[in-house]
Length: 344
Image (cartoon, rainbow, N blue to C red; front, side, top):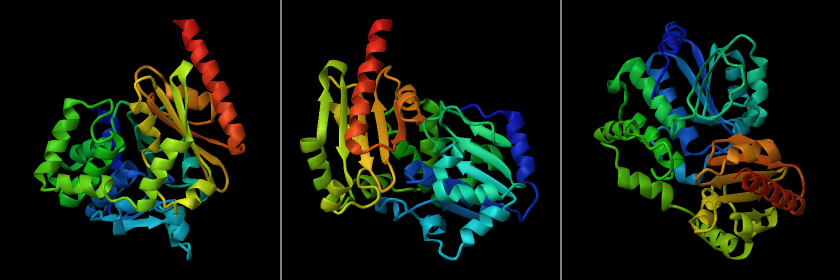
């Protein structure tokens, strides 16, 4: 993984003054990569003598609650006394991890906007970052933000800075954002990094079990319902979609994180090359998109759902009711795949 030497020197200069107030923030509905990278980066900065507040907009999935450093993660929505907002508004540096659009922070974005003097640093692997950062480490080719953070930690402080808790956090991020090391960008450098993490004594089978085998009964029943009753396949285009309403979620006592990974299951069908999931929330419908091969869901998300992401993993939002959202998706699929057929 290439890290620009000049950018690294700029980062060193930013971190040189000791005792700074530094905010480390990650995106709404934080996943394993967001939490793993943020906790690992917080640990490095705290070890340098800085005062660090590590925060996410809303609560993380229950299956990540076992992590060694999870107690250092602040939940913005649950901060009733406004301490997190004040810290961010008064911070000297703000690190944005695993996202590049400030809107992904929802309510927490106002606290960042209120701070007009802090330097903002991006550490992320998503496409097309806006030009709002004083310094950015944006590497779309990186398989996860945790892998990028690993590279920065080693470049700044050497492998010795990767202790047990850091290795655990980084492994969770790398594992979850690569689908347990089954997606793209699985480079030799990634596996060399994983070897270093393993050398720190982390229990890899236990981590896998904690993340993938500790779901609620409601999640498993919801998954069965989603695949059996709610999955639709548009056979001429190799596209599938699942739509889950708030009523569906209440029926199975939905908890945050229960729908994690549902969008991937239709891709196990031989003929399906693109999968979508529509999850109804109070204010909008969350759109998740996955694909395989050369089907670019980043382009699809940007064009039809005001979103984005990677070639094979992207997302967006819809402010239409569920039936209209589904119809919009179906029409978009016909147009999108029709254009692909015409270009071939």
